[in-house]
Structures are given as structure tokens and as C-alpha cells.
Length: 340
Image 1 (cartoon, rainbow, N blue to C red):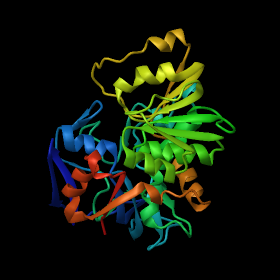
Image 2 (image 1 turned 120 degrees about the vertical axis):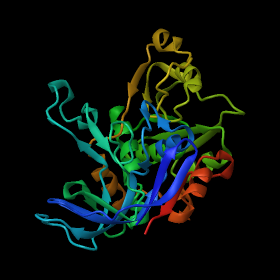
Image 3 (image 1 turned 180 degrees about the vertical axis):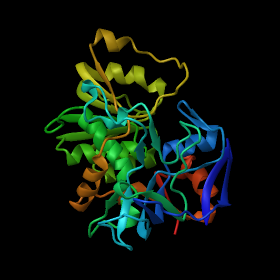
């Protein structure tokens, strides 16, 4: 079968790899769709994302959906042909966490994640034609949620987790700084959670158009206009350290910033003085717990992710797909791979 494999910075190939065999409690998913994530692009650009550095070839991809293929021994309650998405995380070792982290399995110290170089050997991802996963990683897709949209359950879960980190957003005015794919999903998740208004900011007109299509009440091109001021809650989704100073100054005194965009794992200058003098609460948000289940339910209830999906490519054109996703001038938001 074919797989999208990164061998190093700038070196992504469509390789032929062995067909997988399911073991006890496992299933083979015939993968139909995958969404290209910022971490896939970082491996493509730099051979690393955050603190995870490539030491060997890695199959990319963790935003996937498809249909159940073959079943391994002892699998119950799963039917071949069933449309599913996949929770990418596997906790390794003792799942017990300290009491202060109860229910926050995303903060377990040893989590293997599809398409991640965080540990050795690396954990191959889902940009393959057939993928073996544990049956408990499957999340069935209900009627009305096809596998193309189902592939975005994972990044929508990231957005929904970020919104939950802010507490209740119902009736609140929200700023989303950065209107890339995760920013667009945070817009949708905040509106779904009852935010009164959501304003999205970016330097890209195409990204701002997508944010409006995802439900933003207003948009600001920060290359031409200043950030809105005195909003009590902001989500920083760009991951650009240079954006932090202006955002911390724009948020209302005593307000909250939820950091969703992945910041660099190396020392980087950032203006943080307002964090102290304005008593800003700065909250981190990392992946998700089981919000992928909530994401599927939200899509079934009408949350529409289709405006985010701007480009589609076949598996054999994966390198072109990555280049388009990496090029902001292309007007791309979420670039999708047809993997079946």
C-alpha cells in the first residue's frame, strides 16, 4: 500500500509500505480522507515540530476518517464498512495521573500520537491507505457526517478543548487571533458554545473570508488596522511569538488569553510585560481529552466545517498538497488528501 512519509526537512515521498495486520482488539481502517495539519507542515519544513525532531522516516497525518475494513480477534461492536474517525492518542504505561490532573489524559507524560516523532521509535500516522488502530480509538460517524468532514473531527476537538479551557463563553465577546485552520475552528467552536460575538484577526484576506464563513461576526486585517481592544477573552491561534505583545496589550485588564497556537520549543523574543501589569490570565491548551466525541456530535447537530476545506489532492500528489498548504498566498486553509 502507499503512505505519505517524511524523511527529513523538505523530503516527503509517497512510499510503498507493508499492508498492516490487525492484532487482538485491533481493526484495519480503510482511510478515505486526511487533513493536513500544522505539525505535518512543520515536519515537512523543518524535520521537527516543537520539541519533536525526526530521527527516522515518519508516516504523516493524524486528522483522518474512513471505513472499518478487517477486524482483528476479540473485536466486538464494530461492523465492516462502518464510517469512522480515529482518536489519535495512545497512553503508554500507568494511566494514573496525580489528582490535580484528574480527567486530563492529554497531559499524561507518555502519549503516543499518530504521526508524531516525539518518541523513538516514532509513531507512524494515518496518511496511508490502510491503518491499524485499537477498536477503542474509533469514533463512529453518524448519518449526515461523511468521512470527508469526519476527518476534521480531530482538529475541531482541539478547538473545542481550547474553548473549554476558557470556562463558559456563553454570552461573551471573543477575539480569535489568527484565522488559519485552527483559528477558523475556534471561531466555530466558540459560536457553537454560545459566544455572543466572535471577532477574527489575521493578515490574510483569504483567511478572514474563511473565518467569516465559519461564523465570525467580524474580522480585522491587522496588517491595516489595529487589534480590537478591551475584549475580556482572546484565543491566540497563530503560534507567532511576535503576536503576543500586541495581543496582551489589547485584551482588557484582568482578561484571559488562551494559547492554542503551538509556540516554538526554542528561546524566542516576545513582549510579555503586559502579562503582569494588566494582570492577564494566560492559559495553555494542548490537544484534547475526548472532545473528538463532542466534535462528531457537534457536526451531526449542524456545526459546518466545510468552508474550511479549500483544496483537495489525491494521495500521489501529497507533496503538492503540502506545498499548497504551506503557501499562504495560495489562499488555502485546510488542505485535504483523498487517501482511498
